[in-house]
Length: 543
Image (cartoon, rainbow, N blue to C red; front, side, top):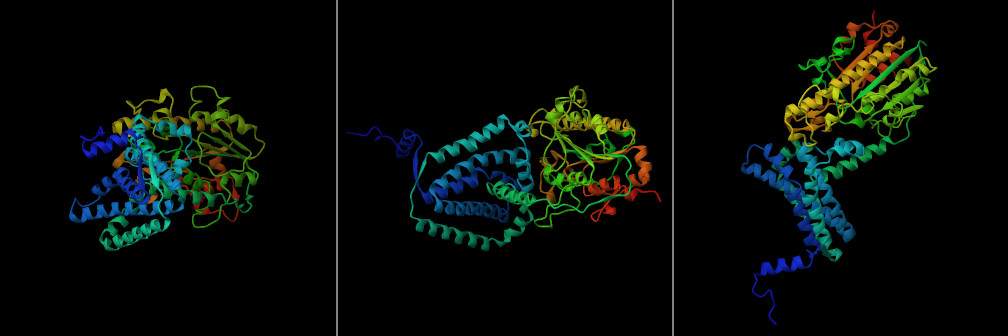
């Protein structure tokens, strides 16, 4: 009997059978690995191609050789990894390919949409972001990326039967791939100077190695931080005078959008007409929250002290007999041993007014809590939600939407630059109101008091096509680490500490490293770890 497909071209017959079988296909293990590695290089690494083209001196023969080498290396390292996985288990290898297809699609979306680098710092952002902060990133464009680059390839992988191949043959293929890899690298030495120069950028957009490798690195760092905290040396107090110190940890605030730092827009109308002191040339330790907050609360940079994890400032002060209150509208702080930690959800229960869903909730009944303390020395930390993107327009009450029109899209590149800046500047305007309210509260205590405001890091608003924060520090734009650092002191505090306001204003440079020792100085604390050179108040004493 004549086949119904006899008169059809062979390619049509194959496609017809392929569709009839529900897109099922069979592949040898080596064939599957080669196709998977090639598709990974092509489907998910075109942002890397775009970066390479933009950073080479035109499409010269040498430039094309460099691009080709980069892609060959991506293919070969992916193939090597897959050979190793399939040597262990076909099921493991296939399932991991499905997971990576889905993860790659989301990673490519963020790289393309926000021009981010998926380095260790960015992966730290990912793992420390709660759903309430992540949900604004959801968009139709993300869904399209997830379906086209994620779900469809994953489904095709699932429908592919990987035939059993002798392990010896797979091992020989692995050796051959390794030999080709080493040979290609050896004969492409002329390209490695360019690769080395752009290593951080390339390493942060190569799929899936960017987020896989840097996730592992971040977890290793996290495990080191989870080592039991080492207590710091006990302190003594040179005086027992009543003192209240408030540390406000801002979020994603960059100095260049503060009129206090010379910005042409009036984003600080209240603070500009107050006795708040602006410290010049302030910088952050990192470009993401967890690392920056750890730095702010540490007595020294412990990155070079492997396995050491010293207690943070609030825990240290609590242990020395100071009343410590932490109020949080954010997260990312290290483990704390303090008596009072209150998050925004709990504060909202007794909050009244229009600001209870914003950072204003942190000030709710703050004066009452301070006055109820029986201690002579009180330390308060207010951890803001601040100017965290991409939904800047949700970070302030409607009354503070002064600069218009504003960006209301999570795909920031879809907004004009001015709309994006308008939305961001409104968050700074609201922060101005917040800090002025705090100043009023402290003045009403009628005791020696001060506040330090320091942002955890800055923010990119599309400069050079980069958005948000978390770019590796060594290549981060200045907007991500140049931060505001403000100080306010009551007259009683100034007299008690013998502060010269003019000396404090004249400081040439300040960093987050100054916070720990300045707080110690404000409380007249002394211990072997106290560093007078890092105490901004000690350096501003009158003769």
